[in-house]
Image 1: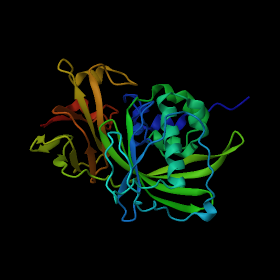
Image 2: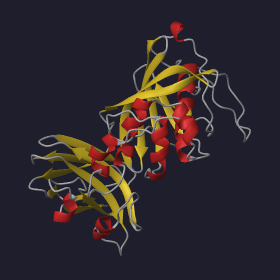
Image 3: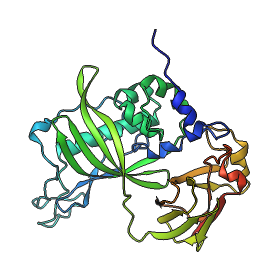
Image 4: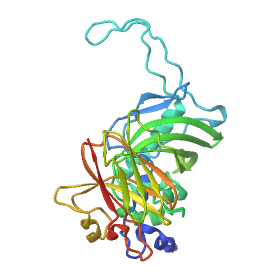
Length: 345
């Protein structure tokens, strides 16, 4: 009989610790997920390093095949725009000669995009079997915000309590062949309203008798900040937030966090309905958020450190920030009043 997975490390992971809320905000570090059935623009690296829009693949949760021979492929850049001959538009008018064609999509870019989309579709569809077949134990541990690998069996037990979030790929760039089996790419994506960038490592791996792409790991990168995003400075001191200005111009907001305390804190950004207060978070044992509470974004700030939280496409309105990390007694800092609000105009 198979050995039951060892859950001992879970006990020391803050969301599972005694008296802590059972929530998995490490999920925000997850690989991008798309809406089922959606087609979204993704960008490949252009020759000057900027992103060029390319169409996203169709949605499915099927093991993504790997057909590219990496021994003959170097660092990826897409082909330069071509100059097509004049074409006839649907309304009968001709496209002027010299109009640039959309950038060509390199085969490796297309395959990695399909692999990433497959992974996220499997998450949307709660297809644990396929998801665990095309991700590593290391990555699944990173998905939960812990450095400990998570086996397929343990993930299957934990999957039902994952906080459901909507993810969207924004860019895929800087694709680099590391060795004959490994490729890295920088991916920028949103999770709920939070914008993140990560370096994903893919490897070619045999799955069900076919060569496929497996997501081996991810490493956080500096987030790419949208142009014209407004800034909001928040200082954390004595288990309290101090917001400079308390208002920001949307839809894109960058929150710069400075933690002057000697313990870790978080900025968990939420949208609350009119009849819901933060006390609902203390009454709710988890794993999900209470009714009337919507996840917006989250950043953990280590003691004495700084962090940046980038929020995109925020609707106008009031937003609440709380800290649910446990204090020395195992109680969330929110219980001692660690909360604040800001407004997006």
